[in-house]
Image (cartoon, one colour):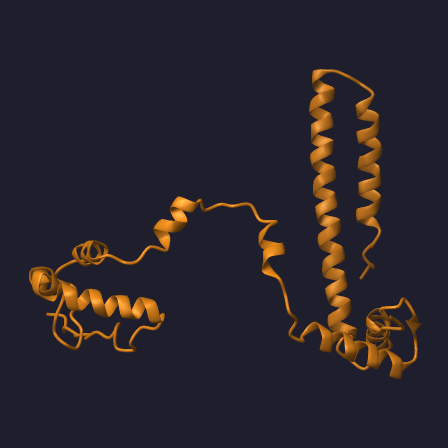
Length: 212
């Protein structure tokens, strides 16, 4: 079986580039069509060459990369050389090359990095542009009022699934004049403390069998 010519894509690409270069020097409708055809052909050949090189690289790695071969050790050694740290510099600008000194510099760096420091927020905040004006800020930080809770309560669907107590939003809406004070006080307490009761979102799920 004849051995395939690995240089065939490069030969075709170089030939197409020469034809494309000659086609640029002539003008005419037919020449423009030929020029477009050559450009499309060149793009197609470049894509084929790229796919061929990618496939060849993967095949080479699958064959020799995971085995205890010279190729594997060469790849590992090359990566090790790239990742190897040969020196570190102190805060005073002194370059250290011995292992003990580099370990000490790295240890001191990360200890200082993750150690708690006193900071002043005003310097950072002063560099930020104000997005929320004073009026919006005052409205956002204002105390809660009963109307907000009433609006939220009446925006719910009355027949939503009730909780373990058996009361759905429709119950609270119907008896709002009676339970609004308790709802308001409880909600304000949760908001001020920043912690909701674990049972707040509890609900009952009923599985209804599908009829035949």
